[in-house]
Length: 206
Image (tube, rainbow, N blue to C red):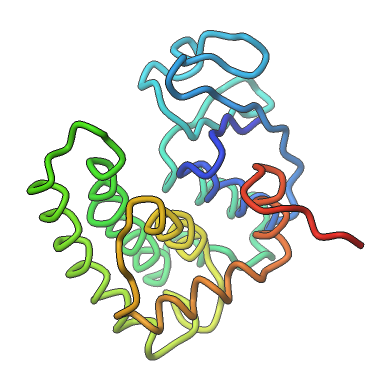
């Protein structure tokens, strides 16, 4: 399998999940502005939507959209416990959480990365994100991960998106449980490995 990614983008989430699941993954970096891949291919030909992540399967088929990709990866190794079994209520709770992160957090960050976003719109987005993070804070104040005691693909997604806060000057100091979660996840070996591979943190010296 090949993952098309941009360093630190939402594609970090499936990168983490693949490593957590012990799945071999080839990486191909994408220049999001030029829409070219590291090997020189036209990224529009890979994904007509024009954005990462894209998972290219060994069959040549492609899968897009982070929430779908992470569930696919988790299902390739059910023993990893990264997603509850299909058909269980727990699986729908996972999809519920992935949907919330996708629509309420992920998409709310997008205007904050655009230089032409007005100060008024920027302030409104930050206020909206703070309200949406309060729900997450309440969940994490009661348990270590979004679905309980076990790390899931939803945690990889939340960690990835929340890492953007420092880049857009979003103050999360009022969410201690969320900050503790971020630190806890950052210390996981697979997360560290993914972030090192993408050049987001320096490699630790042995």
